[in-house]
Each structure stands twice: as C-alpha cells, then as structure tokens.
Length: 131
Image 1 (cartoon, rainbow, N blue to C red):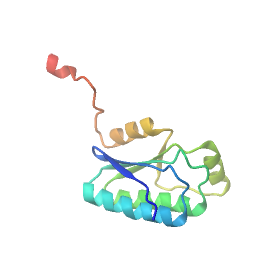
Image 2: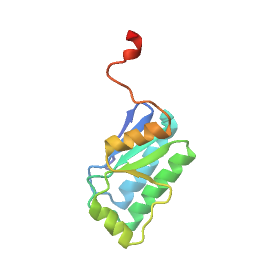
Image 3: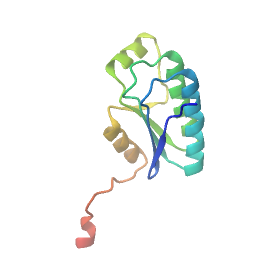
Image 4: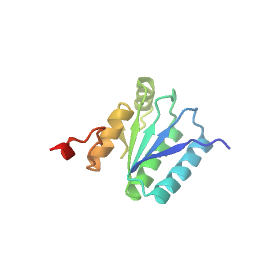
C-alpha cells in the first residue's frame, strides 16, 4: 500500500503530500503520523498540501482529525500551501477546519510553529560567541 513519507526535522515532523489523497491513504497517514508523534515526541507537525487540487469533505474532516489527535498528543499542527481553488471549494461546501492552524507556505508554517512553541530559529552563524 502507498504511504506518504513523514520526515523528522528537529522537534517537528514534515509531511509533504505529493500524490492525490484518497480515503484509505489519508486514514493511513493519520495512523502513521500519530505513531510518529508518539515515537519521536515531536512538538509540531507541518502538513504541506500545496500539490493537492481537490480536498473533499472526507479529506477535510481527516485533516481536522489529524490536528485534533496531534494536539491531544501535545503537538501543534499547521497546514500549509492550500491552493486558492481548494480554499474556495471548501468554503462553498461549508467545510470548516476547526482547530486547524493554516499558513501560506512551508517557511511561514515553520515560523509559526517555532513561535507557538517559543523556539528561536537557528542561525547559520551565532554571533553571541564572538562578543
């Protein structure tokens, strides 16, 4: 069965969905992501849906479910990269993502996670040692 890769980046998990989601795949993603949060103790999950052209009601509910489950496990979830057509369709269908935090892109999503978890972004060159 097809799986969506989950990458660990420090205290976060990064999920970039590069295929069309179907019901079984999104359910497997929820299970895999829940297991990874428990196994790694991740504090944040970044879910990149920028390649999705369609989010139907089931997938929308599952995204909300993923955010709710990870929140119960003490991890914040940010959904990034929602295409305008997807957002319009979701609003027209009356779909809401309660409790789901969204950001425009991966960079802003990572900044949001760091800010919410009060983690400072790492810099390539730390000047504090030179003072």
